[in-house]
Image (cartoon, rainbow, N blue to C red):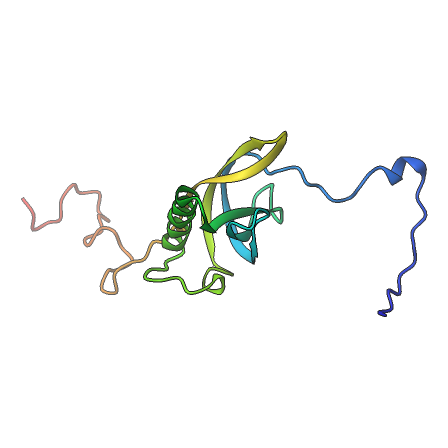
Length: 165
């Protein structure tokens, strides 16, 4: 048996009912996230498999919060499986993958922008993803473009360069 090696903390009665874990879903909105975790398992009914991806928010007031999304990658209901393939394809395109995704490791540790909403199912609120977007590209200058926007700077207050009429 393993050695736990920790001291049990004493709490007041008020503290026993409170947890430091916050399972409140992040508000609907647009977030920069990283795919940080994955898991595949058989569904409860034994009719297929799901893929769970964990997303962690990077930056902003929700920084560090995480949420999971489940995808029915194998299912006896072809519509459920089709939706999962469509959603995973959108995710893969947003992180720059194309062709065939062999396994979830191809998706892990990639950042993207997601637009979320809150779904209520069976009285439980969960985060759902409406849109997957690639990270914005930093503006780049062409190699032969100078640092000046105007090739002829107007230093003398003239409207045109002297050779222009």
